[in-house]
Amino acid sequence: MIVTTDMFNSYSGNYEDSQEALMLKEAFLSSAEEIITGYLGYDPTEGQHTDVILSGSGSRKLYLPSRHVTELHAMRICDADLDPEEFIVSDDLIRKRDYRWIFPQGLENIIVSYTSGWNLSRMPSVITLSIMRIATSCSVRRTGTLV
Image (cartoon, rainbow, N blue to C red; front, side, top):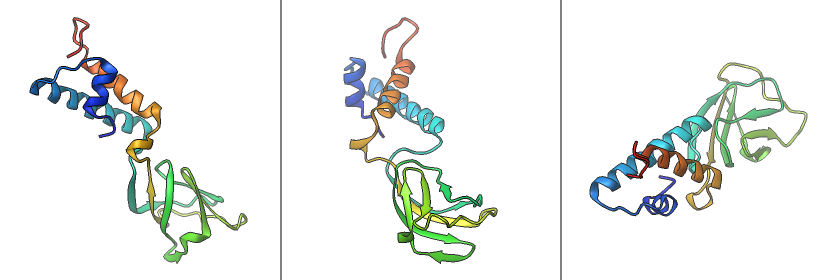
């Protein structure tokens, strides 16, 4: 999980540590993380993505369904393996070093493997804070007090 219960306790000011309270806090944090991941459209935690199938648009750029791409492991276009070193990776897009080269247009004609996302210690603050805010909203009872 991106946010630990200790982080959540510090943020919310609620240090109740009964078994029931801890289970609820973990459920709130897990739900909040799912909401944020769904909103972003990608999992922000660091991980490898293998054999992701994409469609070429006929442009110089290929956008990946992830952010903060740190390494391109493999690239296969129209059944031909290409050297990943021939490409430049920038956040969520890939382009070839030769700026004149384009990704051929086609449906599901590109397969890539890459690493993307953030290590938990380098997670953008806006993501961490959003998870804690949503979890806090979930944990507020009708009475206005935290669980």
